[in-house]
Amino acid sequence: MSVLSEILAEKRTHLERAKRTTSLSTLYRQVADAPPARDFVGAIERATPPALIAEVKQASPSKGLLREDYDPVSLARAYALNGAHCVSVLTEEAHFLGHLSHLTNVARSVPLPIMRKDFLFDEYQIVESRVAGADAVLLIVAALRPTELKSLLQIAHGLHMAAFVEVHNEDELAEAVESGARLIGINNRDLHVFRTDLKTTLTLAPMVPPDRLVISESGIRSREDMVMLRDAGVRGALVGESLMRAADVGAKVRELLGTTEPR
Image (cartoon, rainbow, N blue to C red; front, side, top):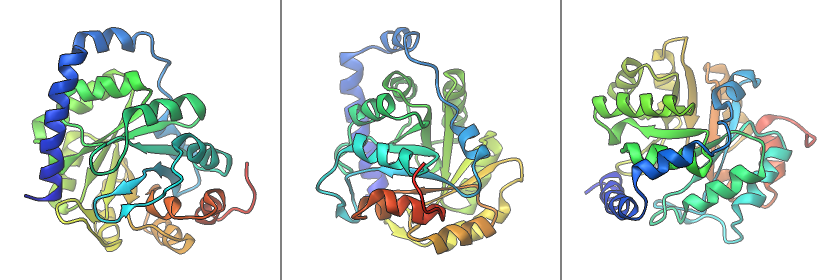
């Protein structure tokens, strides 16, 4: 079993427990009381490329614990202060040590658009994300059938959320484009074996139609990487591990963006 398959199996069990606790109809009623979604796509479009989507995550299956002094709110505030354009919050519990409450707390504490990064495959999870404060959700093509991807895209857009559609190879990219996805994330990490190669973005980015926004994910560590992605036409970069390992998170954000002063 690949890492992705293992995580998805665990998420299905977790989802069934959640549904027994809170019904989908209850979540939809709660959406009416949620603050309006912030403009995730607009934040990327307005930024000087590549926009920075700064991620908070405590651990990963391939690298283990990334940061012992893990405080999602403090990290997100440092990202916002130093120029990040959006924040991604890892909410998967078993392998990444995340939690949905981390997203809620971050959404209440920073003005930036927030994405829920998790392994989502069911309408319930999309609505749950909006109730928790997410302005965007991650949809992984490798985890979804084409009909499921289109359905979840519609549900997210119906809740005024952006859908960040993640691909790793040419076949997945074609599927994402056919679905109508506007935000296409190219993951340089193969989720089946968790190996990373930045060349994945450089290979796939030229195949993306010009009316879509390309975001590169995983393995981005330096200003040089950001410049290389910019020159390849990439509109944004999602960075997690190098920020989590930085002694001075704010300084690392500024380094990636090529700026010298906080906002």
